[in-house]
Image (cartoon, rainbow, N blue to C red; front, side, top):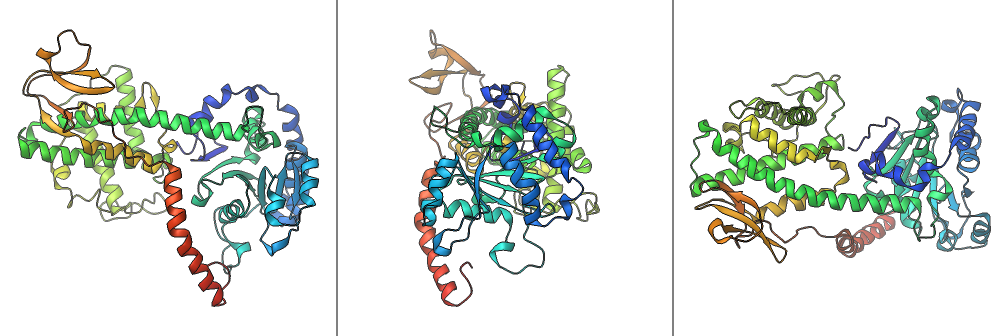
Length: 513
């Protein structure tokens, strides 16, 4: 989930939400008593509580933001450091201690000044949105999207971490992902303080205090550990999900053949059609799981919630856990999915749905994936509830835990899906069993497997998935590591963008197009 079950925390894919809700509490820092820091922050917040929204940026910094940074979080910082080269400067540069700060002040060059900074920061007025350009403002840098500004500061300095705040909302950005503008960790400090949630305050204090940015004896800071361990969790999750997607493909394919009214034969044409459209169905489901996790589809809206994939997955999970019978002769889940697919394809204000925008606003995602005219097979065929339930449970859960799709990157999800392209849907001409040899999983006629350890079985006439080599699981990967992608982008697009900037500047249109 992008939005956690903690209403004061908004994790926008910077860390793993599952890690934040569960695993982070295993860190020794979580056992610290934060009462004193909470009381200091609470006192500062209440000192002029009714006035924060009326203050301009400079006053809010003076009376709230800087005192919290210094007195509650223990930071050593320089506001608007005057360095040469005329570069645009962050509102704050944060240092490990006053000694390093003093050394930095003696530096004259822009890069030299920030060389030992642990973070940069930018502050806005209380009512300023951290995601939108000031309404009606021209193109000057000061009025750009605040998220754009912090990204700019992170990329013109050697610093890895950035803090952005308007006093109420506090965000952390990382250089690797700040360019996305919507990848951050955000805390609603006002809500935590107003509800006296000291445990919740740890999500602010432990992440924004000085020690969160300073490297410990292991050579990593607290934030670096959280980020690294989130990535490790995402990789493990990706491996597990890849297995589940493979199993879901087999289940859904079987479901198409088992629904008698589909009139599908297990011949070359039938196998090809089922495989092709099962892949499309899986892609639809993965798309929606991911979109709902990031709230691109508003799963919190009560009207959307009735139609959502999230509501279906919870219903499926409850029935499976309670051992309730789910029939293969009914299509309730398929009908719900069909309605959801139509909503996504046509939009909530379409002729079919006619939902007022003030009640629900789902734009039409008309890229073709959900278009019934371009996917007549999925429009005309059906799968029984038993098979849909099994497949959705495989895609939604790992054991009893729901999968945090927001933790996965789009390329990681893409690689999981593309990995399925190596498989062919086949019909077993004899009983088969799966064995593992030299790290490879492959199918073997059951009669040849005597004395071998097996872990899966296919009866004659049943469908199964295998690669052209007869392997049960493909060993290749389509996933390209981030550092390779960034290298390619940097060395192909950067020269082009530099040329455009020079041309833009020569025309007297400013520094940035």
